[in-house]
Length: 268
Image (tube, rainbow, N blue to C red):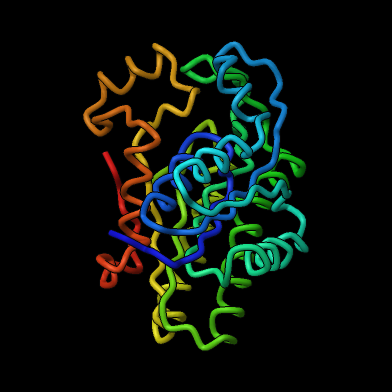
């Protein structure tokens, strides 16, 4: 699955699936720009402290690990809710690593909001009502940010006459939405649509575009209550590790996945 000589941008690469994906791509020969945004979450009895600590870290440790292994990487902190950021990230990648061949839209503006009066989920996480502010925060990163990153990728890819490219996003929720995380689910649904459109429009330019729907993945937020939920479910089969999901993403970014495009790939 070598992708030697390619350059990737991975968003949300300071922890969890993003960090694992950056490392996996680097092992396969990619240079990787690891972009991230430090986020200070409010204290929530349903979210482990370790997860909140992961979210305030930078990506320097990810870059250091890649460089120690002989790879090339760069960490850039940036807020994808700023429309000027995509062009800045691609400029930085081109200057330091090379033209971007692979885009992994992993970053999220995650929050838990709801239409119901309940302020606590069944897993003990605090919920907030849907508001203009909660909608804007979620859609600015997961929908607009992802769309602008795809648009910047496409513009530069076509302008330089490239004939090989990969776009991979991550999604969650389902056909019946995402109760308890309604804006998150809706924003991810928008990102799915953008990515499927990219698969169709950019196919003539050698670009594949897919979405990965991970299973419950332990990026630090999984509690005993979550594990009990998975164990009792008929549709949730595993609590995955970030590196397991990253290997699927790395496959989609490889030459071996040339015929895989326009799919939402559900992992269980």
